[in-house]
Image 1 (tube, rainbow, N blue to C red):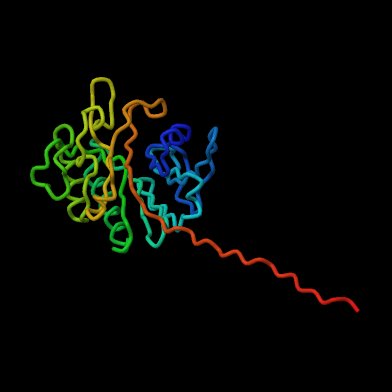
Image 2 (cartoon, rainbow, N blue to C red):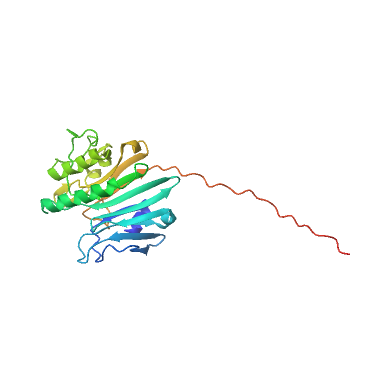
Length: 253
């Protein structure tokens, strides 16, 4: 995965289903070295080694990390200070279609509580596997759905859209014209769906240049990698003025 991210020039990657057995320990992270790069892996999990969420962050951005919150084995949050703005990213792994309604409701309640704690001044990106189909059309959810999705909407997809509308977010995967192969995020045999989404605030639409799927990578054979191209303007580092040293000496007697 690190080699793929390096080649694709991805700075931050959200991970789901890493299956590392652990818990929600603070400062739970480790460096992972590739051939020509280093990423830091932050993760949350459970002691059974099932599911799990996390982030892979390129080493040149590590000094920008402001805070990491291990909320559950399905939600982890990282905050980066970029210039004068705090960017908050959530890595999310929603319960699958076959899970109980109580478990799904608990997940979305926990997710909403986490979002409510994020100040309005911060830039929010909830990302990950939502296990729902928002569908190809925007009908009923024009504020969040761009009308360029894939497949047929299901109840779990409606939850995704309701969450987006309630938090003034848009589903980035539906806002760009793409061929079907660049919309499908999960493929198993003849079964093809769109379940991995990139959400962001409406005010960021001009800064998000593209949301696309990379259909074939060795490291992700079923879940395809979804990439968001985000333009962030960082302040230029101030150059220090060079002051030459003055050598002052008194003549000897």
